Length: 196
Image 1 (cartoon, one colour):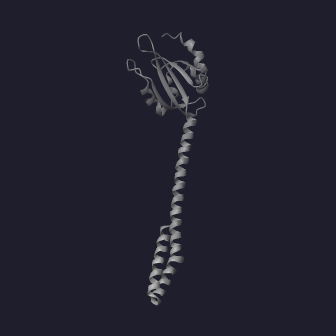
Image 2 (cartoon, one colour):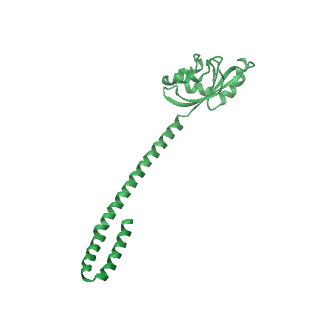
Image 3 (tube, one colour):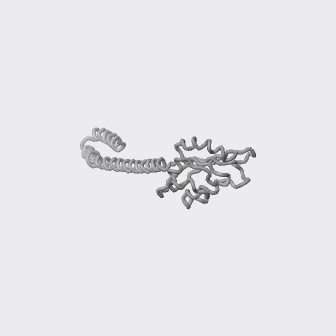
């Protein structure tokens, strides 16, 4: 494939909503669409030292491992990188590279598309943070409910069960037969209240 057919693709590439670039097999920029030039700045189409210069410096080595070496296998790849936008803001982006094979079966050029995913990632991060916060709120609410049940059980023992037990003790001395029936009733009430 020669570079001439690129003219046919420029109209299509410029109509794409994502960044689209055509690179040489060595990773040098041949063409960047309108969205890419707007995203990276007006001089972006003049960059000829590979696409690594838009990748945040801490990720350039990892980016370089994705680019095939001459004579190596030519597989398509997808990876997420942090890129520097024209205004200096670092934004996460999904980069997808596909070889366009020439007559020799080797890549004549690479088509690379880039989708800014920063807003989606931030939303996902925020949703995960809120879910963690909600989990914490639910755990605190559960602990509070458990504590309240414990307090309620203690209050029931003080105000209902203990006075009933004292009454049973007094009755035992007076009427043994009736006091046993009352004791069974109090035990049943205690069991029901403590199980609540």
